[in-house]
Image (cartoon, rainbow, N blue to C red; front, side):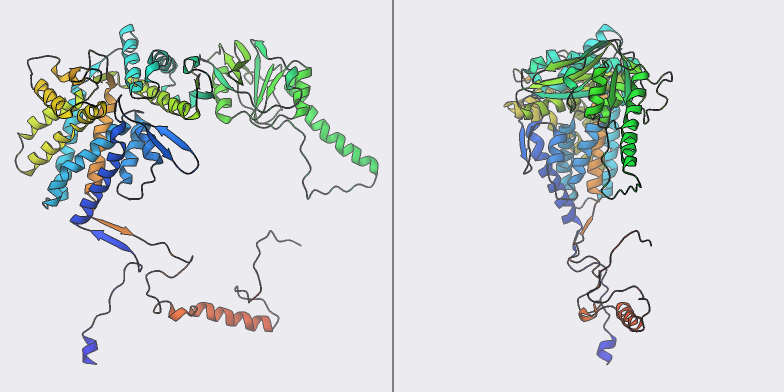
Length: 596
């Protein structure tokens, strides 16, 4: 007995099969996983970046957009998913730099990895990384060049920002077409005070077929694809000058009877009165739409064949099943209000107006186009292209350019691209590190070295010798007597280095600030993780957790509460009474409304 008194029972905290890893090996494992993710998108950086083809079993996607690739990659490692999050946040906030932020975060972790292996405490590393990040952000802000967006010079600067964003995209050879288009759209929103609602006010419509140069912009208007139409649509008038527009969220068609509907009549003639009443309801709705003076009727819900023919006979145009986003854009641009009922349509301010409406043929599709609208906030970009993948990538490229120009207008400051800013920040951090004592100096130096990943990768992707180019850039950026030395970056066209600011390779200041801050913060999050716990999924719903087989599970027997419940049920059933809650064998449980 005494030999058992000295033994302590084991305390089981985690379910059997739970995988745990902690300490230094866990940190190194997380860093290696993040490096693998950054290597996956490394070759997509810059104007000479390669594309990735991703097939998910149903759909093929060809893209070099970092956010798109990160979203489509099915990353299983929990820590590496942090890089997906920062890429998504960069895409939401700025629209561009989604590959750069992943590369910088991966490189910071790579440079920090030796310190982790040498048992430097993670909190010391994190503290100094945050110091370096704050210093780098302030340096970028001090380097930025402010500009006035309302001037002609400011307009040209926005064009160059849009062109830089499109440089690395599939449609880079068509910058002269799309850059002015993008800037006009965003400037239009800025003048109307709708810059923050860009995603809802600007639509991009894709039409397969034709040349990409056939793409065009409906500025200050709305265009959407012709919706499903019934018989009688061909007789409608397809062009209006100064029309009145009625916007509805009402179904204008006869509804079929419900399967369980019951109508009791005592006289066969009463059935006809019921049918007549149904028709009268739909005719009353249509009469009210016509009496309000509308020339165009749009509805989010279906407009049936009866209503289509009714409107066609009276010279009106109608379209049902209009997408909610398109209907809201029409309401915003024309000043109309979407109605959920056909009562009271004759009140002031209900109908919208526009200068011209026309149903146009674009490629092999018909488009409803509203132009010369009172509010010019909305715009629609019609994209053409040869294949579905090309148009999808073009849409992503245009969206990135729109976000970059939006951010440039908001920040009113730009910096030079091509790796110039990263090299200047790297030089400043190395100088700053000399003023610090202890381990912090080495960590900040590692952060400074990580900044060089952008120019190095730009050179590698263009097929040039990155070692020679980086050496030339380091030498150039140390020449403080030259005023423009800070703007020298990688020359993608000819190899070597060049003044990227003079060449017009410009990016919004917020782009670099956001990417540096996000990459540093992601690195700190990764380094702060010292243990990972993977809980296995239970094989059976409601199975006992945290217990060993045969102990907590009572050797496969049912819990005592269930056994008692079954016994009580059997007794009550034998006496003809009600059961306590558990059903016997062969009795199923059915959920219903109940009733008499």
